[in-house]
Amino acid sequence: MFRILTVKQLAAWIAAIALVVVCMATAFLTSMANVTSYGDAIVITLSHWDNGGSTETDLVREVCAAFEEKYNAEVDEYNENRGEEEEEKRHIKVDVSIISSYESQFNSIIASTNVPDVFLVPDGNFGQWVSTGMMMDLTEYVENSDLIDLDKIWPSVLDRYRYNGETMGSGTLYCMPKDVTPYVMYYNKEIFDEYGVPYPDPETPWTPEEALEYWSMFGYNRSEALGGSTVFVSSSTGQTRLRDDHVYGVAKIYPESLIWSNGADYLSESRTEVLIDSPEFIEAFEYIQTATMDYCVAPTSEILTTTSEKSLFLDGKAACYIEGRSLTPDLREQATFEWDIAPIPAFETNQNCNGWSGSVGYAVYKNTKYPDIAYRLAEFFTSVEGQMIMTESGFSIPLYNDEALIEKLYEYDAGQYPENTGEWIRAAQYQRAGLWQYLPSVRWKERFDEDSGAMFEKDPSVRLTPEQFLTDEKEVILNIIRTDFPELFG
Image (spheres, one colour):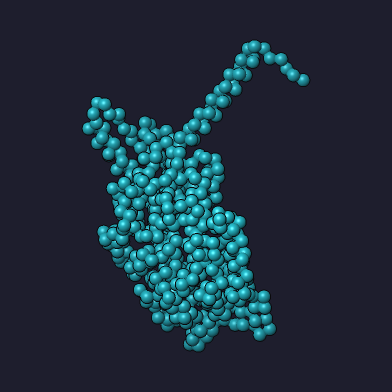
């Protein structure tokens, strides 16, 4: 039943609706402008993840505070000396937002178009996010920058934030790198001493054969004087079992270090060919399968469902752990043993290409209201001044092959672990970006990782050899790439 409103009631309803509309419009415009009220200051919003814990988030706020101080000092100087015809400049304030589950949450932010002025971009998400078209082209800014020396930045760092419309690694620059995290082999010196295993060379990587020989001495080939082998094979099923006191040689073996150093690769440079059935690629996985399933020098995925690689290392259940520089602050606080770092084991074909480095960068939202200021904030993280602040924290190493910054890294590391600081620099110089940089979508990589478990089945009777698996998997991966990137195939 309808109710007939009086003129007065109707006017009240119209006023109420108008108020709601105005409030909604105001909220929308405010969110689009990305501005929070800080007096008369211009607010630049920056979003960041919490993956590095308070060590990293506190550091980000420290760098932002240094940028505010620097920028606002310039504003004060300008305002003091400006002419009558010139408009007074405003101070800025950086509003840092820390987001948990960053990658998944930020996908929702992208969809809502309420994107911060500056936002963190993990190199693993760069391809997916840059293809949405929401990042501002920074090439011209960088080419005209007085703060960035492109010739001194480690080559692989900038290239991982370039995109040519189809693949990463070349073309337009869309992010300013914040850090680089080379991967190295951490090792527990006390466990090495206990089992009579020689320390790794600080500069030359172990060959795969040397690594297997030394890693197996903690369990499979443990001397009789130390209790003998901890690995047993069932005569009826052929399955291995481990004694409770088993110590893994390494908490995880990364395939890329062996594949790349053996002169092999997953995909061709054009990304139109899958190369996983090459003899060199197969050799790398034959080694990993033997080391994991026969010698048990690394835990299986089944073991890692109840623990983590980091826990195994910290608890003395793994003698080595392959990880990045970002682990160092945690080890300095939590490790109860002496430790150091060494190069990741590699084939001699290309020993320097023995792994990948991680990185995150900062992108500028293409629709930001303040593109120049937003760029300058992203640029400050990459500048020598910003890098000096982060190097002093110990969280990352400098992006630059710069004498003063490298000296600062040595100064900071002096008197604390690791002693082999030079390995960070060597690794940063040669290591490349991870597999997620090959194409804007990582669906092909995720499928490969999921299917590769067939080579590590607990039951030997159903376990595939690397040659069997990789020969069949080649067509599976190629079909995914053809489906996701038909433009690559004309």
